[in-house]
Amino acid sequence: MSQNHYQVLGVAASASALDIKRAYKRLAVQYHPDKHGGSTLYEELFKAVATAYHVLGDPGRRAQYDYQLQLAARRAAEERQRQHYRQHSQRVYGVPMPPPAPLRTRPPAGAFERHYRPIPQQQVRFTRRDYWVAAAAALGFLLFILSVKVTMDHVSGVRNYERGLAAYAVLEHEEAHSYFTDALYFKPDYEPALRRRGEIEQFTQRDYAAALLDYTAALRTGATAHAATLWLRVGQCRAKLGQPVLAQQAYQQALQHDSTLVRANLLRGEFLLFERQDFPRAATLFSRGLRHQPAQLQARLLTLRGLAWLKQQQFDAAQNDFWEVLTIAPRSGQVYFLLGRVAQQQHSDKACEYFQKAVLQGYDFARAARDTTCATLALRTK
Image (cartoon, rainbow, N blue to C red):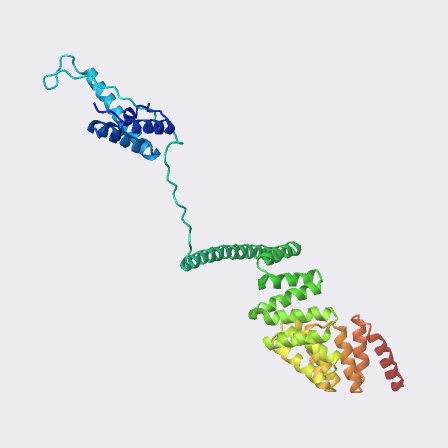
């Protein structure tokens, strides 16, 4: 049988690379054809030694050669196993099977003898299109997160507002104020919550500065449906804070949004009547309010308009308004007092009677007028 490369070099299969190199040098010198006169035998031996060192001297080729030897050894072992179970009398092609020749090999080469070729590292390069795709993905993710947050804030704001509205309906003002505040935490520009919280601060807590801030913020949201009412509330808060001029400007804004807003006409007319003493314009505003008056404001509007007529010395118109008030509130001492003033201006003897009725209804301001007028009337009668 032909020898393997280890046998050619005369080294063991587990020989080191240095031992293989030394064996090759020794045999190359020993079998060199020039030393043997060009002998063909030694030339063949020299070639066999060179071929064996070509394979075993390189770690990669040696590892591959060792693997091939292992495969050959495995096949030989399998063949021996099959021969073991074959009958002893059986002949192959009429002759007994020769015993398999022992195969000399070694364990697989260690990691330090194997030849590894490093995989070159490739540098990743991004193109402009890759940057655009990454930016679009990041922007899409941010928009998704933002949309989720906006949706959750809207749901939480509306839920808290509805709970506050339920508490507001049963006059649980502190609880309602807390719910409206929570709703505005999630939706800072939620006009219904601003308006309702401002009403609680104005009418229940008497915190006119805080209410003014809420009404102003609600107006900034552009809530045109309640703009007139909001301007009216702003005017009332400014009046309570001692800002009459700004209050009148707010009432004017309310009337520009809704000219039928009775309370705005009433409050603006009072300012013109008592502060500016602009009696004709005050009477006009009271008349406008009376065209759309609610029942609870009719008596006050008539009383103030009658007073404006009285200041303009339109006594008949004033008396008509005062008598109409008495049909609504027959026990109004203030109206009887005003009728007495009209009678005084007309030099009527009924002035004493009207002042007397005003005193009987508990209007103490009429007492001095009654005493003076009735005394003068008594002297005149004597």
